[in-house]
Length: 209
Image 1 (cartoon, rainbow, N blue to C red):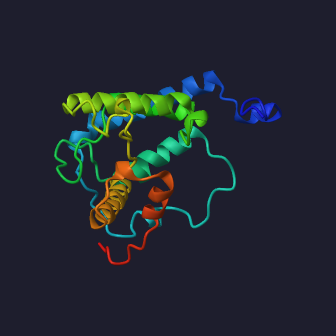
Image 2 (image 1 turned 90 degrees about the vertical axis):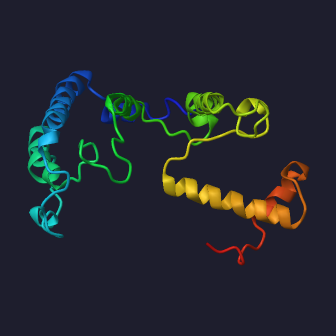
Image 3 (image 1 turned 60 degrees about the vertical axis):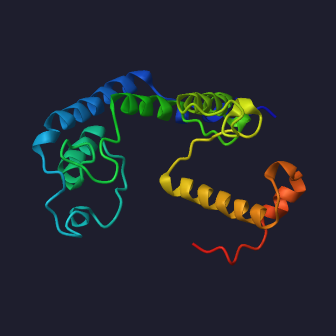
């Protein structure tokens, strides 16, 4: 079965009108541009008490679609005043300046494509491009050509983690397996696929963080 053209009868429901996208997209970009032009004159953190922001909203969701102009007005009146501005020039906590013009524009393209890279067949280019970019990163770090973090080494390869929390889970899982290997005097390269599976699910109750 092909993964395309299976729901042609539903296409009008999900079809994106380029004219509407252009008109409404310009309104959103205009608001974002105005936001950045005024950002340095705003406080970094909102002067609000806990619960004060939520109290501005209705207790029930709207039962009718809302016009974009109304949503943008609500955004300016209710949302932007309650933001801790991570892009503010005086913001120095967490990860300051975590966005940029390339990031904003690329997010538009990503959301338009709307593809989820679950596996190669779900989005071939996202899988292959990730491999290419991670090997580029290894070049920038002057990693050895046979590094297991290189895809071209055929020994594994690096992957992009979505969040810091997800990355920490991967690191702790790797540390757990490394501990099991060292306790048994084993090298990962010596293990069969079945051995790897058993090692992964081995009792780790004594390895607590």
